[in-house]
Length: 221
Image 1 (cartoon, one colour):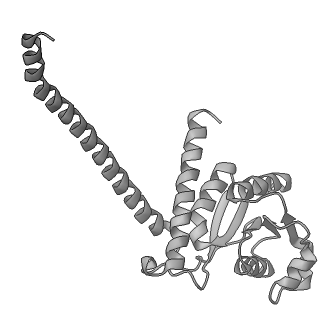
Image 2 (tube, rainbow, N blue to C red; image 1 turned 90 degrees about the vertical axis):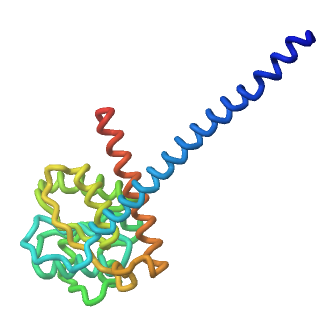
Image 3 (cartoon, one colour; image 1 turned 45 degrees about the vertical axis):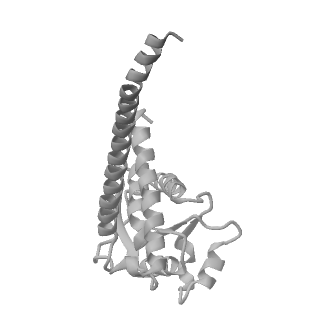
């Protein structure tokens, strides 16, 4: 190599390295800022999500056309049956029931359920998640020509359930009726591993549901 050219190459090498270092530093700073912004948004969203989880019993409400229970705990079924016995609606729809379970068996499994409720209970077997619960219930509500329902599910599950149900049947009046599981501790929830695990899992499912509905809305579905 020409000595003059070699001297020139050596003279420019530090400048090139400095430019590369600066470019990588800018990329790292931008990536770090994006991660920090994402972490802040996630934390704020979690705080807002926790604050919409019902922390008290349901407010007294009037009669609705139907009571809808989402399976996932005996307390939900017992609550739905009690509401039906009180005359809070004329029909009880239980969504997400295992195949092979009929109304008679459901009443036997429930605590203190009057046998004369059997005529007013309908079971749905098609749903295997909350989105499916909403679709299955919407089909049943349309067939019955009902305009309002009382939604019974666990308190931590209520925000996502309302999101799915409002998307599936925007014209229906929804009355939330949260059930409060004994082991779910909303106060100081981060101190209780079981509660914290439930809240974080529900929060992430809620975010995915929001993203899915936003995407469908954007593409016109």
